[in-house]
Image (cartoon, rainbow, N blue to C red; front, side, top):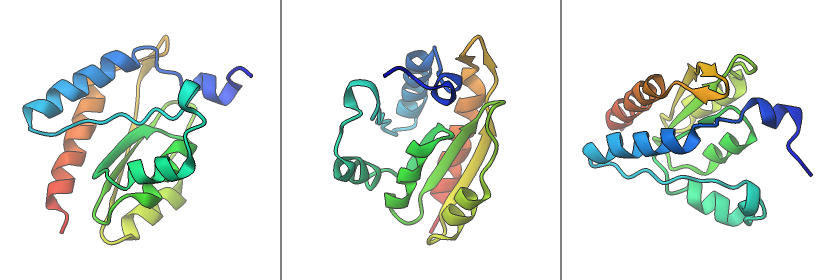
Length: 138
């Protein structure tokens, strides 16, 4: 089966470029970036494996969608960054849950997409903010 309309609206054609940029910037700060891509060929990854993966993350950043619900398995005092496009809005339940689980932090950002290409620098600035917030957490 192909992608549904909702999935098509969240495609980032320059995702590899974005990930490479974020990895380089984080590497300069001594931070490792690990990408969770449980879609496509990996869509049958066991739920337990996905949860274990999330349980090792201090910061999770991703497009608005069901995949970000893996934040429930993140360690206490973690940061979640939810990227929105013009087709999505902040969901108060996510924000409220993250902000009240042992001092977790939720950050929402709006991404500018041009022809399904995301502006990279604003995403980096948001991730940089998330890193700063994570260092402040108890």
